[in-house]
Amino acid sequence: MNLSRKVIISTLVWASSAIAMSATIKDLPVRTINGKVYHYYEVPAKETVYSICYKFGITKEQLLKENPAVADGLKSGMTLYFPMEQEQPADNATSATVSRKIISHKVEKGETIFGIARKYGVTTDEITNWNPALREGLKAGQTITIKTDTAGDTPIKPAASRPAPSQQNAYIVKKKETFYSIAHEHGITVAQLEAANPGVTSLKAGQVLNIPGNAKPGNKDCASKQQELPPHETATTTDENPALPKPEETTDEGNATPDSGKPAVNIAVVLPFMLKEETPSKGALRCTEFYKGMLIAADSLRHSSSPIHIKAFDTEGSTLTVKELTASPEFKDINVVVAPDNAEQLAVLGEWGKANNVKILNSFLVRNDSYLTNPDMMQGNLPSNLMIEKAIEGMAERLRYSTPVFLSLNGSTPDKADFVNALKKSLDAKGITYMDVSFDGRLMPANLKALPADGSYTFIPLSGKQADLNKMMPGIIEWRDEAVTPTVKMFGYPEWITYRGETLDNMHKLNTTVYSRFYSDDDNDRTRDIEHKFHRWYGRNMEAAVPRQGLLGFDTGMFLIRNLAEGTEKYDGVQNGFRFINASPDSGSYNDVLYFINFRPGGITEKNIL
Image (cartoon, rainbow, N blue to C red; front, side, top):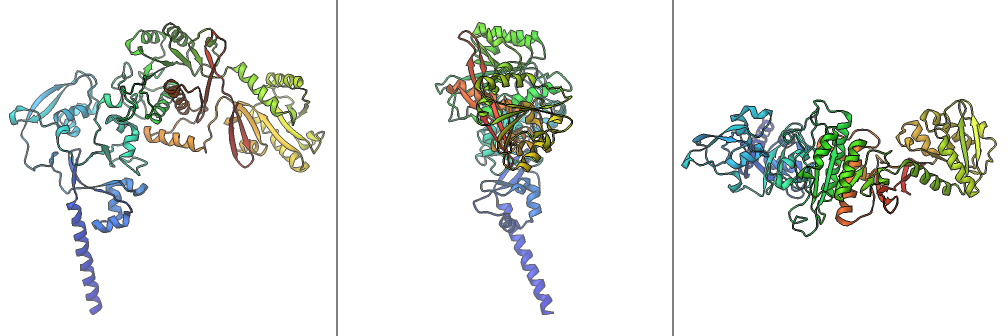
C-alpha cells in the first residue's frame, strides 16, 4: 500500500512538474507568420534536444513535428517555433474584429503578391483568400480586391512600418519550395538565407525559416536589377516545365555596390530556353541547367569588388529573335555574350560583337572556326585539330622512358587510327621506338610473350570503344601479374571518362591516362559542394550527363566574372578550365586548356592541366 502511494505521489509530482514546464512555452515571445501567431525560442550554445524537451515539458516527437529541421541536428542560433492554441489577429494587438473597407488594386508590371501585401499591411494568405484566381498566378493589368482599415479611410498600416518583434521575420516553407526560390522571393541571396538559418541543410513543407529583417519581399532591386526573361516575365518554376530562375545581382549591402567605383560585370546569356514550350526539350533543360550553374558562380563571387549582372535571353530557337535582341536596349553595356549552339545565330551575334567591341563566347559549337576571322569571338573549346596535336605532344614526352605498345583487335574498326598514325609520326621524329601487337577475339597473355618481362610499357589501343577495351585490359593485367616485373601503363581517349563498372576498375589497375577537354571527379570536395548547392537551391540534381551543364555553367561564370572583374586569365575549374590565347594577332581567341586524367591504382584520380 505504501509502495503504491509512493508511486502515485511520484506520478503526481512528475505531472505537475511537466505542467509547470509546459507553461513556460506560453511565456516565450511571439511572432506572426502568415496570419498565425507562434511562440519562438532561439537555441543558445550547448543546448540539446533533451534539455529543450525537459525545459518545455514536451516530447521529442512534438518538437520534431513543429520543427522538422531539428531532425538534421540542433545547432546554436536556430529558432524553434511553437504554435499558439488559437489563431490571433495578424498584428497580435487585439482579438477584436477589424472593420475594413473594400478597394480595388490594379496590378502593375513587376508587382508580386508579397509586394502588394506589404504595401497594404495585409498577409499574402488574406489577399489570396479575397482573390481565389491568384492561385493561378498574378498578372500585370489584373484588378484585385484589397480590404483596408476604415479608420480615416486609409489603408492598414503597412507591415514595413510596424515594429518588428525581432531582427528577423519568419516564413513557412511551402511544398516544393527551394532555398533559391525563397531567397529570390524575399529579395535576398541564398547565402543570406542560409546565414539566418544555421543548421538547416534541407527544406520540408511546413518548416519555419528565419528571413533576415532587411529582406524585401518581391523587391527586384534587392535581388536583381536585371530585365526578366522576355517574353515570360511571370513564368513560374514547376517540375514539368522549369522556367529560369531570376538573374541575381550579387552585391550584398556593405560589399560591392554600383557606388564601389569598380565597373560592373555585365554578362548576357543568350540560349534557347524555349519557355513557350509546354514540355521543354532536353536541350532547353540543359540550357536552363547551364544558366543555373552560372547563378551559383555569381553567388560564390558575391564579395567581388565589382557589381555582377547576369541577363538571360530566350532565343526561342529563332535567328530573327536573336537579331531583335541585338537591337534592343537590354543589350546595352554588355561585356560578354554566351552564345547558343546554332551556327547562324552565332554568326549574328559575332557580327554584332565585332561592331560593338563585345566579346562573344562560343561554349557549345566545337567545330566552328569563326574565331579565326573575328577578333571578338572566343572559342570556348580547344579546337579538335589543336587538341590532338597537344595530346600527342604531351603523350610523346611521357613515353621517353617507356615502350609504346599499339594494340589492334583484328576485325574491329580502328576508330583511332588517325590519332595513332600521328602519334607514331611524332615518336619517329623523337627517336622513340614502339611495338605493334594484333590479336583475335580477346587479348591473351600469350599475345604479349614477345615483350621482355623486365621492361616498362604503355599500351595504346587503336580503338576507343568500350567493348574492344574490355577485350584487352584483362589480358594485360593477367600478363603483368604473371611476369611480375614489368611496369605497365595505358593511354586512352576522351570518351573513356564516361566508362564505369569493371572497365573503370581495370583502368585504375593499369594506371591509365586519358586526354580530355573536361573532367569532374564525383568524389572531389569541390564537385560535391556545387552539386549539394545546386540541389539545395533548385530542389533537383544536375542531369547525369557528360559534360554536366550545371558544372559547365558554374565554371564559365567563375572564369568570366573573375576575368572581367579582376583580369584573371587562367581558371582551373570543377569540370572545365579556361586559358584563352589568340590564334593570330588579328584573330579571336580559343581556349587552350587540355587535361590529362590519370586513373591511378587504388581508385585515385588526378587531373593535370597541360
